[in-house]
Image 1 (tube, rainbow, N blue to C red):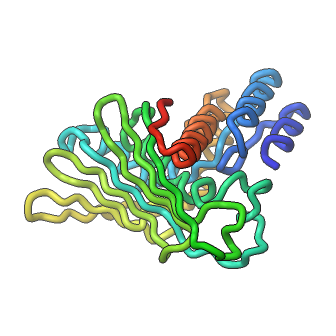
Image 2 (image 1 turned 90 degrees about the vertical axis):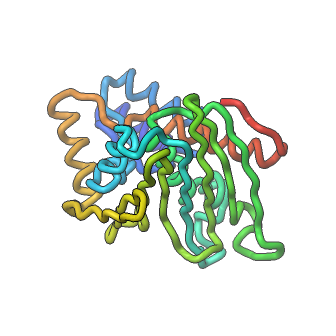
Length: 254
């Protein structure tokens, strides 16, 4: 429903903050972006983790060289989904399964921690046979990303395993870990270097309040949001590449 109501809101002269995933297909994302430009209104996608302190610090550290050059990023996000009749398991409504709903966190984290856009995607899907929850959408996804600098990301997404949300940034000199990394609260971060473990204690903010404050600032000061429509388009384009790779069993260049 995002594309329809975003376009309608923009045409009515409203600024729009859209939930993620931005839409079910890249063409819908582009339609939303074009409508915002035509209306001269702000369009922001609600990637709440980009506005909270732990993920923001992880980005700073990963890109600063404090860990040495990043070699790999590992990220796993998922939970065991319940009611088979819910909209998240309806392909027409959800656009896909765990990859669209929860795997997008691992995908987006790989992009913002590396500061780069992937050039290649590999993926495999699996769903438990005869499970009524997965008649239309996938249960498990494993996908790999190659970035221009040589960074590789290995990620998983699931609607069937015990809930988890973590990532590791593997540098030449140290590694940064967050577990949980994207939950609404209780985030933890530490850096492992040699035989030492340094845990980071940061201020806690309300993710949703922070992103709405940012949106308000962008409107009042006429600034581009940190996570504009183009950010959502990148993720949906890559998710479709994940599905294409899994379907064809081949690397997809993006």
